[in-house]
Structures are given as C-alpha cells and as structure tokens.
Image 1 (cartoon, rainbow, N blue to C red):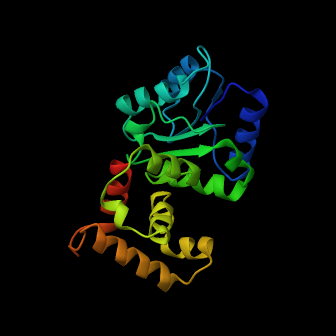
Image 2 (spheres, helix red, strand yellow):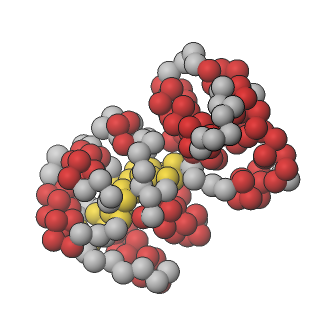
Amino acid sequence: MVADDSVLFREGLVRLLVEKGHEVLDAVGDATALQEAVERNQPDLAVIDVRMPPAMESDGAKSAAALRARHPGLGLLLLSSHIELHHVLPLVGTPGFGYLLKDRVLNLADFTAAAERVATGGSALDPAVVQALVLTRAGSALDDLTERELDVLGQVAEGLSNTAIAQKLVVSERTVEAHIRSVFTKLGLSDEGTNRRVLAVLRYLEAH
C-alpha cells in the first residue's frame, strides 16, 4: 500500500507498482488513514512519505514506528524529499526496512527493486541516507576502513549483492569480495560460522 499526501505522487507510485505486477491494496493521504488501512488490508509492504498530515512533520515516520511495533513482519519503505533521521533511527537495521529520497523513484528499476527487497524482509537505504548515518557519529571500528571499503559496506547496507555492487562501482566481483573480506577482518568478524555479512551491516548501522 502507498501513503503520501501528494495525490499526483501517490497515484504515480500506485501506477508504477501495478505496472510491475504488484497489487496495491490501498492508497491514502495521511497518517491516520495509513494506520486504518494497514489494519484493514494487512499488506506485505507500506510505502510511506515521512512528512504527512495531520501535522505535516514526521507523521509518516512516527506511524511507521507504530506499525512496526504492531506488525513486525510488515515491510516499511519510507520516502522523503530531504533526509530526516529523527524517529527513523530505531528502524534502521531492522528486517524489512528501507529509506529512499524521493528522487530515487525517478530510477524506476532501482525503486521497484528496493520495494521488492523490503517487502521480502531485506533492506534498502539511499546512499545519501547511509552517508548521513555515518556523519551522525564519529569514532568507531569503522574508522579503520578505507574510503572504498566504506563505499562497499554502504552498498551492502543497501541490500545489494556482490554482483550488483561490482556493477554499480564498475569493478570486478573479485575486487568486491576482496574489499568485503578486508572489512570482515578489520571489524573482527573472523568466525566463518556466523553470517558475517549481516553482522558487518549491523555494526555499520549501530555504530552510526
């Protein structure tokens, strides 16, 4: 389902998702209607504008947090014209969460891929959001990572596979794998029996 106070933007998202073969159960324009629509329709994913009526502040983000508490399995994809981390930070790093800037929707393939990842429990973080998270704090084990290693880890946090990261950064998949191995080593994630990829992302998000 889709929640955005702009009728044109809301209808555009609905049309895009439907054209990609997804069923949109409802489309609403305010945070109160969003809560009611989720309870009524039980969707797999809610695409939510961070700023919505009635207060036109962070009503969408607050609603997302409330929905996550009541529906842990609901995918939440937040959209915003500008980065707003207040009320969003507790959701970052949880399964089925994404946060994209609205201009990302202009890249239809990226947006639909992000929506599909979040709906199935994955993550999707806009590179600008990842950068903002990094800048919120300083001083952690991540300080030992090179700029390229941070770049690769940021792509991992977005939910991309090694192949997708290689294509996006225009490097070989073997190079990406080497960077990720270096990240694991520097973060002390040497246990082959653990899901080091997940642990690295959690360390990245929790530290910042």
